[in-house]
Image (cartoon, rainbow, N blue to C red; front, side, top):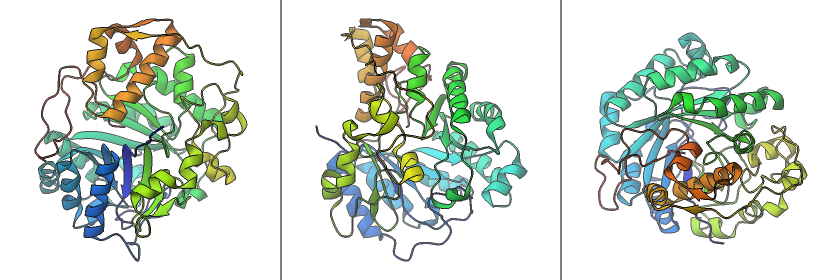
Length: 420
């Protein structure tokens, strides 16, 4: 089977203007040796050749790199969908205009509380909340899709419904709820119990329809799919651990890891090509084989849909193939029902309008799993609507062409484009 790094998360710098206690990068000061502009541009070319379709430019704080727009534009001109992950403090009208000019399509902004004082205290920055909200509004005004990023912890567990309301009121494209992985500075934080994680995921599964057209997504909790399947609900196109199969991370120093939350290094792009690392690293080969999973994850009938969080297993046990300690599900040993399903013409046309291949494939698998769960042998547009959340978009965007980094253009009506 051929694997491609369809989605790459790139930590461009360790420099940051805030000091968040859960930061997996332990960001603050720049690393002693971060990739140069020339090295970054060459790496963008290599990503494109390998089939990267979406690139997340993050940090630290990526806006502290003077060449950030040059890197973003280089990727956008090659047809890669560029998303920028920022704390939002440095986003001004001028910055947002430059993002649009260089082809950035989406901006992920971190907001961890609806209480400004609480958010500021957590993020370690005076007026950080006000700046982040300002950034959200500025980006939306310029047509950039905004993803509100929240890390759920004991401190803000009860605030999640209010944060969902806040994100929808602000016109966010997606609300991404991250579940803490104890790595970096996060090692010193208390993780949610498995029961509390399960309760929050069940709540998210049930809330998806209520917040349409905003997407409601869990991150670092792939068992979301198992819960959605068991409850006969949509959302199975999201979730599922992508580490090493479609996803990886590159650090400021050039290390390649399966995921931002995993410190296991597969190789370094200053020593070996990104292509060689992606294709031949031992850690990637092991993570691509579900038969190698251990414990409950290895015995689970959902292991190809979910796979468990490999980073959380690694943080807890030192073994990235071990079971995910945050999951409460007990495998039954009974394989999931597999019946033949076919797509009618209209449903298939709707699927094909998703312009990003790896998202289109995730959507196909999620819809088919939902159809099988519901006993639907024929996938119609009604089945698709039931399987997916956040479908009723009034407008969607196609990725930039390989020759242009201009502003986004309207896609076909109702084409679901999910920023993962």
